[in-house]
Length: 245
Ligand code: ARG
Image (cartoon, rainbow, N blue to C red; front, side, top):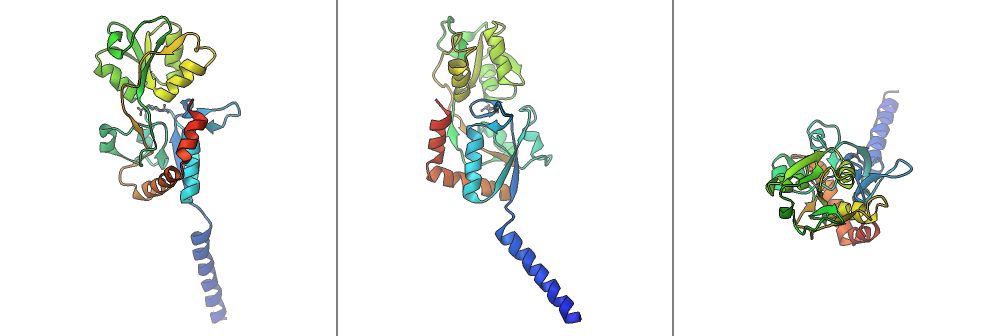
């Protein structure tokens, strides 16, 4: 009887070890502010889709983990990391020296600078020429920082879509935003493409990375393993063709 019990206990332990070694992939909960087309957005079927979503899913497949996306407001999105609300943030987040002090970033996965969007009939070629005018950006973004740095009156918004609505209505005279998002709003959206234009070349160099809590090496290693494989296989370039026009 004793040996039988010992044996069955042994078999159970062996099964558990095999289970965790073979099956049971790690699931990372990842926050994204899905108001940023074509990078992250909610589609007609209420699914979170976009370049970042495809990129992270591809990285997960390469490195053998799973991802569960959590739509999260941008303002305060980083604070959810130390609070343990999720494991990572993918949300077109620019790697900056400021942010590196408080958080860790994955390898960069794309480069996207800021541009200025204005009304079609406004004749400006640079942000500096917006002196005396009001320019909008999403709160706490690199775009907002550029407007302040240029000494121009800044109006902040919780979501970039609200800034474009104000621009089209003439309540502000410009929007500073990441190039892919500018192209989506100003050149593609039916309600804006006849009204708005991109007035400048990208005037910053920005690399996007995935953000984790400082020191979370376990998650960072998984992310980097996946992102490296995605880049090595050229999947990132395929996704640029699919999402960025
Ligand atoms: N790249 C800019 C930044 O990091 C804007 C990112 C905003 N992302 C978003 N999903 N709303 O500040």
